[in-house]
Length: 454
Image (tube, rainbow, N blue to C red; front, side, top):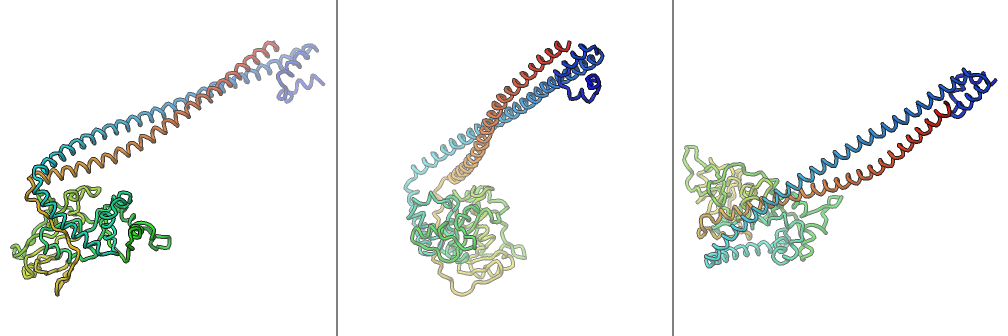
């Protein structure tokens, strides 16, 4: 029975190393050397396979370790290069901004020197300008339930609240405050042409300002405890009815050229001509170019660098023509496309609608300008350069903030990846130690069994 069980191959598949050794020794003792030799060879094969498998596991474990190690090193190196790039960008942007700040300071000093040397003239001009602006401001405030009056009150009588308002940074003001005219009669005519609703329109730079003015409930009703409605309630003026808001970034912008060397950056518009080729008599100019605009609002108000003339006033007046007399305007009808007005009260809308009858009394008009005849030739040009440099400095500051955010994110990712790598090294070291111990134990076991079998 014992001999037949040893010869059965199926039995050998389930025999352990110690059992095989024992059976082989028993078989030799019982005088069966051939069967014992077969068992001994099978046992050696099994031990060799076990040793080879352990060695392959060690090699594969080392390969995976090296592969992961290289990936971590590559990721950390890439993050390090990204950090260096953002740091260099920030350094470059800081250098540019510092240079601009120095130039702005130098120009402001030169303007300050001019003001100090001609202070009596400047004071007279400022007094005239401020008086006219105050009159326009009071006229706006008299429209108690309008959005324009609420904003004007906030800036004049509740100025401490204004810097904390989200909409204060984006709202430029009211249409009636953003332009000036040297001629009072022309100011009243253009105010009548636009109408009181447009004269009291609120002007914003971007859509963010429009959104900040008014919010809505889920059912579409107006939220009274936010935006300009909340502000009105806080100062005792509840907004009633609709109001216009003009967003500069959504307006159709003038795409033509400007008058060369003009500090007011007037538009270079083609003058009208009659069918016979001659110029219409009594033509004084285009309304859009008769508006005087503060230097701060001449440029760099939109993302594309445009000012009020080529955005706001070009959309309000387009190529509205101004004539000396009504009869001049009527004779020029063939060359009038975007409307016209005359200094004696004539008004033609762009759609060919004639305004007849007595002139309307408009109680809100553009303030009077003070002119620029006393200013040196390069004064306004210097102011324009300062405005452009400040605009560039703001853009650089925005770029620096973006670069700093990217740098912070890269540094955070670097720290996370570094911690992951350190953790991986610790875990890999422990795992390799365990594998090597298993391999060493396997080697000892293999050598021991070989000795026993031999």
